Image 1 (cartoon, rainbow, N blue to C red):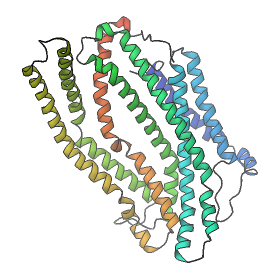
Image 2: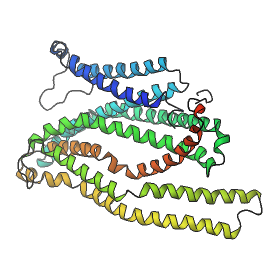
Image 3: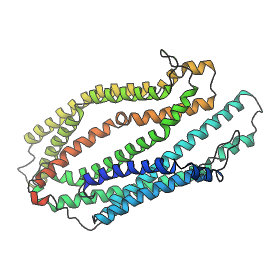
Image 4: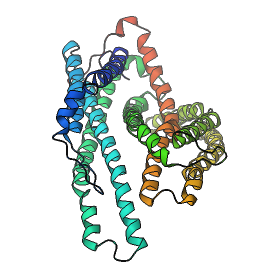
Length: 413
């Protein structure tokens, strides 16, 4: 699944993690620590006057973006030079591009969170007193964010197009790999479905989950310090009183509760999904045989196989019933947690609408990142069932130790 597309998967992913840690260490140890460099840059950095915010792209931010790009592409080029994997243009360089664009999108979110604070303060001012804000001033504030959003929309459209090709290349690599060993695999139950459908679903789900997980980590890095700083404006928490970094702890506890709850409640679902695919494959296989042979797909046989499908689905529906009770109760209830936590601060009148919006948005970002697994648990269940089916393919291939290093495939497209 991975070795067909990535060069030496274990070494590649571990090296990516180590490279990221080293790159972050170099940045904070050299660039952030070099006060002379930052002071020299500050002469060219626009200074925000009262009521205004600095633009999205400033010289210090530009340096960070350039550094991230250099670090990312250096890693990709080194791997492409060391390992001549025919899919490295997509697996290594493509993954790097996706990660860098994901980082850019997180930075857009940070900028918008800051912009919303000023905009909602302006909105509160306009609603509290007639004529306090002119129509021109109101529309001008909206126009300040329009160029950033237009660029971001373009980037997101291009990224979606690129990811579609990335996933298809990964599916092609897996397809070619399994087809090279088809004589060993053709007798496995549902072999055709696994090669034709499961490879596509696996590549799509892993790519989606991988990007979402990285985005969650980047969002935490960006918004966690921001939320901690904004928590200084929170006077107290219900039942606990004043707490430093109050909303950070609330977000962590909320996400941890939901993740543990759903993991316990949904523990049986991956196995049931796996069994479901097995009985579906057996039923489908008999029907396919019945298209060419009159002695196959007889009513009694089909009825027996379909009874297996029906029973497994009924078990699956029942287990999803109580899983969804827990999932929807948690997801709906968690949306009210910031209002409950901020209740004493709101009624005391110590924060403006803009500050409340900034705190609420930052809290949502941090909490969503922490409860990543809670949000995608059903997708993970689907992925586990697909993984179990595909890994059985690889076990058959690996029975012949001489084939473990053979990952020949058609030329990359």
